[in-house]
Structure formats: structure tokens, C-alpha cells
Image (cartoon, rainbow, N blue to C red; front, side, top):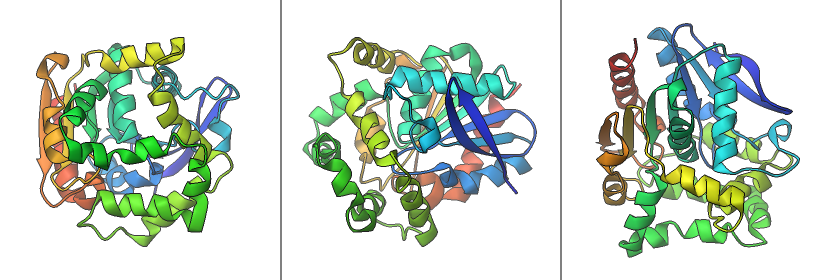
Length: 292
């Protein structure tokens, strides 16, 4: 069984799930999701001799919502570095899905000495993704929700009708997958906590900030090279980030320590949930190849 623990960064407290002993694998969830997204990986990693820790990201509970409302990428990467230090490790393996992948790239760039390897799921690096989106009208249409999240009424719309919009995103991004009811219920419970909807939207709003100094620093970090071995994995049926866009968004020169790109059949945006056996085998193979 997973153990509950609390990680901290300054005054912020982050709930986490921990399982197993051994080299640390830190699991970062995305949107619209929770640490429970990694339940199918926690046991597998523990059985293989790893210490797996899945953390609720900044703002996804009241205790981790900063008073200054800072959800810039630099702050998110520094959260991860603080967790690593608190967990008593010098180097860890990072695994991130969706926004967790974006935070993974940033952490690897900003705190490279602490990262043994990175596994990034479903979302490619921001510069390559932006360039490919401009060449793909269908990807612009798929990413229209990001523009909708900038609207003043986005929080109200997300909460409406028992988070119907949130549920629709899960279903539309993985069109061939019958999303388990408990997966949706877990996400809805998390988003029903005070301030979580506003925090999740702030990630998207500050993610397109190009005017403030904090925004410029985060954009520079997002554009930095990733100097750690990186496994990037996506689903061929992903309807959030199209498979071709995902594949073409990676520039090997930006991954000087090595890049491995995998795309799994019969999987959409939530590849680790839709094809857990195949993804877990891929992940364990990757971790073993990059563990001392």
C-alpha cells in the first residue's frame, strides 16, 4: 500500500503518495489530474526496487496555493528541487505527464545536477510545440481550450454541471478509451477543493505571460536545452497533442544527453493509464539503463 506524506517548499505543503524503497522516482501529474493518476505505476516501480513518490502539484490543494499567486514555471521547477532535498536524495528520476512533463523539462534544465533521467509523457517542449502548432490548423483547433482558459468566466465554466467540461476534456483527449469512473471522480474531487480551479487556470494564464520579468524568465527556462537523458512517450491516438505534432516538436540538439522517442499504439493522451503494462515495461527498461 502507498504511504501518505507531506512535502514542503517554504510555507507551502504538498500531499504525496510514497511506495517502495530504492532509487527515487518522482512522479508529476498534469491537468486535469491528481497524484492518483500514477496508481498503476507506484506498485510496479516499488516491486522493481524503486522508491516512487507521486506529488500533488502546486495549487492542487489549499495548502500549496501561494499567497502571491505565483505559478510560473521557474517556481514549479523549484518546488521539485525542494522536494528532492526534503526526500534526502541527491539525484532522482523524474516522470511527468502533461503539465508534469513541462515541469520536468524545466526542472532538468534548471537543476540538472539533481536529475538522473527524465521521462516526459504526452507534451513536448514548448518551443517545438509552438512552432509545429503554427503549421497545423488541426492542432490549433485541438489547443483552443488554452485560449478559453484565458477568459474571465473560465472558472465558472469549469465548475458547471459537475465539472462537465473537465470530464469532456478527459474523454476527448483519449477518444478510444473508456475512462474509469473512479479516475474522473478523483479528478473532480480534487478540483472541488477551494481554489484549485483558479490555481489550475493560473498555470495556463501565466504560461503565456510574455510581459512580466517572471514570465520572461519562465519562457527562457522553457526554451532551454534539457541536459539529462530523456525518454519522451506519447499515444498515437492522442487528440490533445496530435501524434505527428508531438513527434516533430522534438529537436535532438536540445537534448545533448540523449533523447528516446516512443509512441504507443491504442493510446491517447493518458498513455500511462490506457496502456499501463506496455508503458511500465518501457519505463522500467529506461530507468534500469540510467540507474547507477
